[in-house]
Image 1 (cartoon, rainbow, N blue to C red):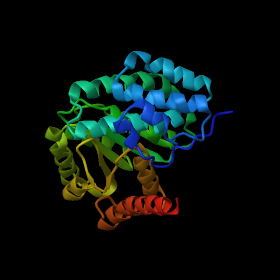
Image 2: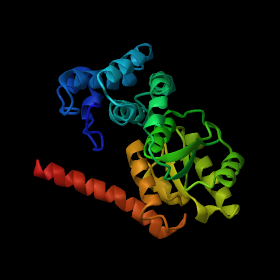
Image 3: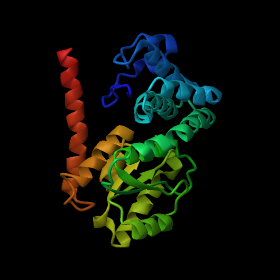
Image 4: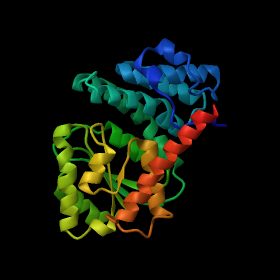
Length: 280
């Protein structure tokens, strides 16, 4: 029977700024058996330090301990790559370090993707995702795509350096509910805006909800370009995507009320975190 390990919460990741010994002292993954908790911490640091030669072995070890693919992606892999993103944003890491961490993620996802696809139980809508033109980085986007698939979405991943023309072709062909733009470099952020303007010019803006994400992206950027949602990580992106096909399904893309409703999800999460902190 698969291990039940809590990943649907936001953990305090301050320890990941320090070292693995500090990490071992946290209560993250404390609902897992001790050997699995240790394995998860090792996997977090494997990704942070870019030790990609060992990644597949760690993944296979976790699978043998009955950890699900979704648990690993939403758990230690997501926390590890989140710390890499923070270091890149703060100029503590540069592209060579990020690429080494990306190799770890690619190695893990090579093993886990077939399992994630197998977990899919229903089709709730189509999502088109891609890294915008001029940007070759896709690891965060791949994690989001797999988590979307596990949540029941059909995902069309256009890959990297996707032009506005290619996004439009995919929208016209697949009629997605959501289109997601990813960017890692500040120099390519503006292509999210250019692609969104192209969707608007083609008369498709009301047909799709537009999500933006990536290391340099923020809620203020989302607001500025008129996107519907900012996905700070894979779990948040999935939560907002689910809202778009349930209680927000009747709202059109670009509707200010839709933007406000998706932003309210972040507010609710922050309030819940504050209430939990006060209670503890």
